[in-house]
Amino acid sequence: MREPSQEPEWHLEYRDPPPSEPVGELELWASSAEPEEVSASLVFQGPAVDPDTITQLLGIGPTVDKRTGTRGTKVLVPVTDGFWRLSGERVRDSSVEAQILILLQRLPPSGGVWEQLRPLGGELFCGLFLQVWNRECHLSPTVLRAALERHLLLRLDIYYEGPNPAVDANDEDFV
View: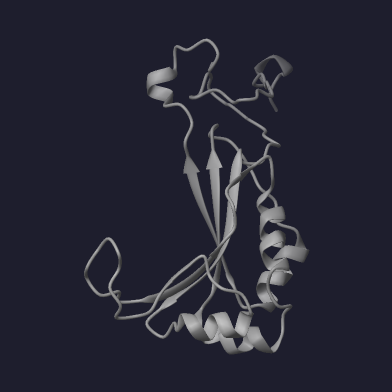
């Protein structure tokens, strides 16, 4: 058994934002902040995707779509995979969960429509845009159930857009 004087000294400190790099031997950081900006989209992509059929089944038009074999506007090669995407806005001061629920409210409830779309492998594509490297998001059982009932993959794409720690490490406001 160790003597009390031999026990390591523990130090837990909350900083917001957290430092850009470790400042000691053991660092524990807690963050309860959501990403600074988030977005959510419903996406279907693949060779079997027919945008007109998806639009008809969901009763809502896409933000953007392309049929397999058509040519893009910027790239003149034929599209090898068709796609259909309904995009939500990229917003500040909101949660990923809130944006998913706003998007799903625009669509039919779970059931037969989603069974028909199941072979196309739809996904909820969520963008998380961070200004600080340590952020978190929570998804409740309600949102996870909603994705599951619609047979949707949940994809979280995380982008760090904050200051470059290597460049800004000496910035007093950053440390």
